[in-house]
Picture 1 (cartoon, rainbow, N blue to C red):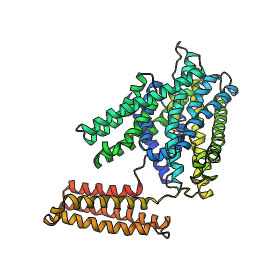
Picture 2: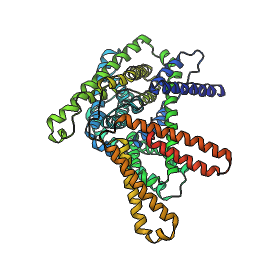
Picture 3: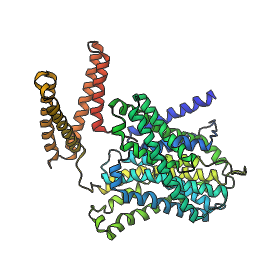
Length: 536
């Protein structure tokens, strides 16, 4: 046991070194994860891991879905709900259906129910993969929002397809009419359970004397509690987690009112999701030899061939769906035509960004080992193998070529939107004016008698004047992307220099460590304004 644990920790450490290499050469780290998973399978003497499939589903999927929901902007999500819904529901069901019929016809012994099971697994693209590939690239805000929103909801819709297909395989019966009715009941009640459970957690966070550590621990527990509560009533745990995550994210400014709580949660969740991504690919690497041995009548080349065909079909189907979905509504509705046209470049990026990832892998690994009568689950190893091939091809091939496609087509912002710095300056000036109004209204008498309050008021007035000038400069047409990047580079240099100065102050032992840490935290917050919190 100790030997296996040490080995797994060593593999995790090696995979993380690969991620550091990916950052160094500026390649999306999920690409290196899938390569690492494949590499682990070829290392001689590796232990063969046998994990409970239900445990994999329960451990990995709720937090992955909850984190995706947490970082989804509800306002942006609602603004682009039509294209998101067309991709997240329409494309998932379209892909699942086509994969079901093609796989059942081309793979010997593959039933239609198994085809839908495979379709439900490989139909959802991965948010982390797309976000890391597109990070730092000049991509229109609309496209990023649609991709993030799609990957959130299509995880839910594809997992519901997976669940229904799984029941069909286990019971041997399937009725489309009954399944459609059940789908809306299970999904709808899952949303109800999710929102009800999120309200309970909201009350606990909001009104009980929690600490940053307790708040972070509760947020880790929340997706599991929502998932298990919904599943207990045979509703969709996936929809419960997604709806609960969206609710908690939207009300987060009320729930988590201190900076220390929010920064603590950011650290906990960023670390946890990153580790989960790496663990899943290490697990597939350890499981691949058993999966290959269990292919039975199919050879490895058969598995690769089927995986390649399924990959080509999923990529082609995305193109076939995205272009009509982007333009047909504009021809039908005058209201839709009021939005700027996505042209051909936007749909091209969305079509090519359909990389599969950790959710598909975790779902495939969660297929039960045995049927209800105790016999082996049919084609389980083949389905997992095909899933890994699809993830490998889409992540490596599409992931490596997407940045070149974006540069080649010279993608520009579609919608009229203020630059990030301009928006930050606009927000800051509103906050400063709100603070100045409060001080003048409620602390008017103290301004003259209390020097600190008077000084704060004067600082606010100076800051408003400074921010106003900065906003005018940013709004000016001459202020381009290169000038803004140079300004950000200068600020990051300043913060690095200030950190070195803080280190000198710590060695001088004149200022307390606590006050130095507070100042360092402020530098971190200033840096976050430039780099963003990130969730990839």
